[in-house]
Image (tube, rainbow, N blue to C red; front, side, top):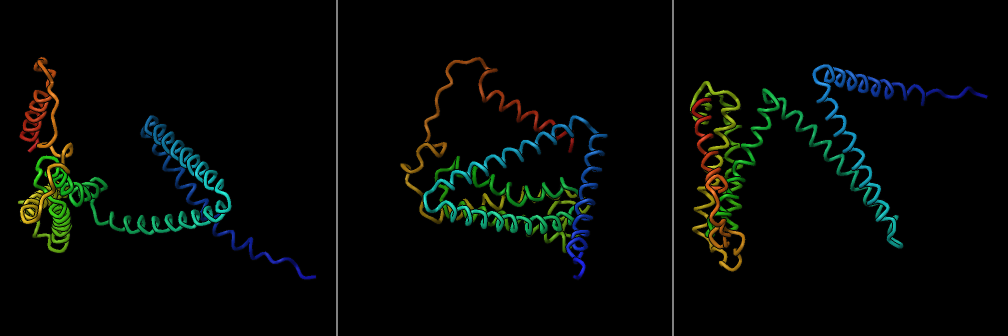
Length: 252
């Protein structure tokens, strides 16, 4: 009789080595984090453990609920697991692409602020107009948000291709990355507001009956009564505005 083949054992060695390397790398990172701050490590550990426990519990409850369907439980579970792994695969591809995108930035903060200027700043302009101006139309909101996002991404690409363009985007050739992100957010907000207003004026607005309770001008604002000045929202809004101006002047 021939001797048993050891190929599975040999094939398993690279996988075991890879798992061991990743485990050691994770342990060293956690050890370094513990040396920096024990409290931070404890918070992160509790968050990760709680997140995993809640995710596992929700997934288990969902599978048990689906399995109770008569005649369709097994088929639904099979389809659900297929969609789950397909989603995880797509998420893995997106995360890998995002990792390569992050390499183009000087820091994680720069990356986050760039994303803020891409999506959040124009969205803020759309939301503000929709809440405060009843003439805003759905087409105006869509095209304003789209143009604001595209303009911000275009400015970032322009500076990436031609660094001298920084003087036009950030109003200074020596501006830092975070300053560039701030000006990108500002210009994308302006573009969004202008396009939203222009398109809204050229399209048919919604009836006032459809906007009641959604727009500031068509919503009944309750009276706050005769409260002391320090209990009125207007007073604290003014305090925050003054503090904002002072801090900007100090840190300009």
